[in-house]
Amino acid sequence: MVWFLAFLGIAISFLVKYAKRTNKERAWSITFWIKDNWPETVASVLMVIGLVIIFKESTFDQGVITDKIPWLSSLPMDYVIALATGYLNNIIFYALIKKVKGK
Image (cartoon, rainbow, N blue to C red; front, side, top):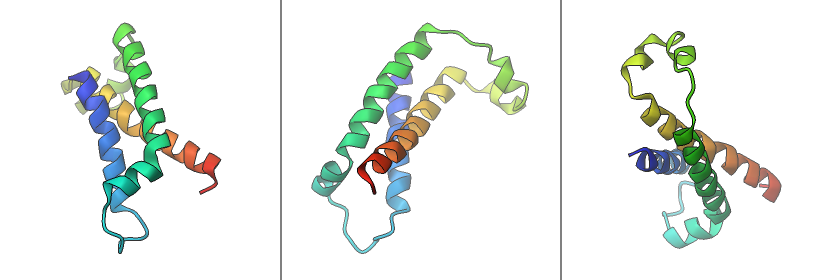
């Protein structure tokens, strides 16, 4: 389930980017999307794989987070972290690669 949520986070971040696109006249095309976004997708997927492996093997004090945001203590933190990792990781790598490409 952790893996699914991490990759779901990546998919959600791409859907948010698609909804916020500037040129809304162009119809969605899988071939254009793959051609335009493959570096970002590959970087995000590889980094998420690494981060999920690291997070699964490590422990941390959840009280640091749940003390400041009490309602989080009722959620399964492994799943929350997996979803946030996929979503935020993709946003970070997408921005970095776009900057390197000069877009």
